[in-house]
Length: 126
Image 1 (cartoon, rainbow, N blue to C red):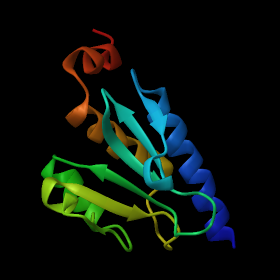
Image 2 (image 1 turned 90 degrees about the vertical axis):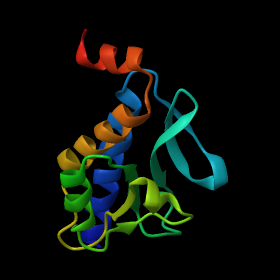
Image 3 (image 1 turned 30 degrees about the vertical axis):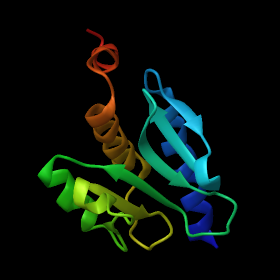
């Protein structure tokens, strides 16, 4: 049970970080939580009601980050063909799952890949 509890805390931190990014909004298509920027999903957060294993799905275009994410316990290319575009599903309940800080780094990379330049500039403080 401790893993599920820590997974829920990690999920909450990642969700909070994603929604703190400039222009980010939360929506609930298909009954799951997503964060969008400019009407584009930059992180799939799944559901936190216990009906499915908790996971975060992000788009990683940097080869090193993509490989690192795929090396996480239980991680896999995202379904529905998204894996071919660099999307990776990272489970949060697996022993050895990435820490919230690393997941937030990956969420930020996903955001930068999809956000308009003006919002990325706002994030960078320029």
